[in-house]
Structure formats: C-alpha cells, structure tokens
Length: 85
Image (cartoon, rainbow, N blue to C red; front, side, top):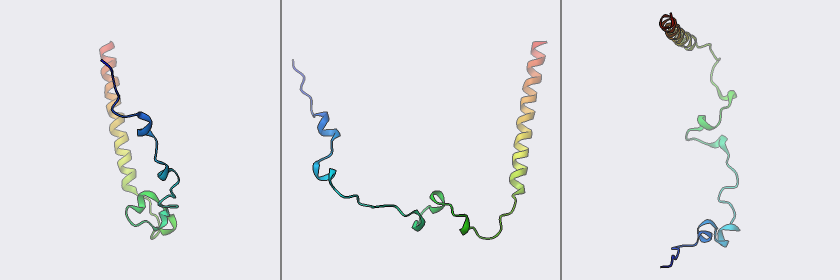
C-alpha cells in the first residue's frame, strides 16, 4: 500500500509569479482621511473641541473601586488571621 499526497505543500505555500511581481493595490494608507472609526486609529488633539475638563466622576469611580477592593482584601486578611489563630 503506497501513500500518495493529494497536493504538494510547495504549491500551496508559494505565490504565482503573476502575483509576486504585481504592484500593490494601495500605495499608502492615509489615516487622516478616514471616516469610519477614525477615532480608533488616529487621535489628533488639535481637533478636540473646547477645553478639557477634569472628570470628577472618573476620579470618584476609581476611588470607590479602590475602597471596595481594599475592604475585600482586608476581610480576606482578617479571615486568614482568625483561621491561623
């Protein structure tokens, strides 16, 4: 019983000669002219409208999250010290 491969790996991994010498479809991408989801790709602070204000809500949220985390870890520490004693 002999084994015959269905396809050669070299033909699958190599590009045809017509594609190897082809010019690129897009020479360069100009991200400044993008319209769809531009803010995910390019951020230009000169385009920001109005003065930047400090976000007190973000500070309050981070403080609350830190306090909750600290109280949970303190509770775990107290439980472990009671189990050890």
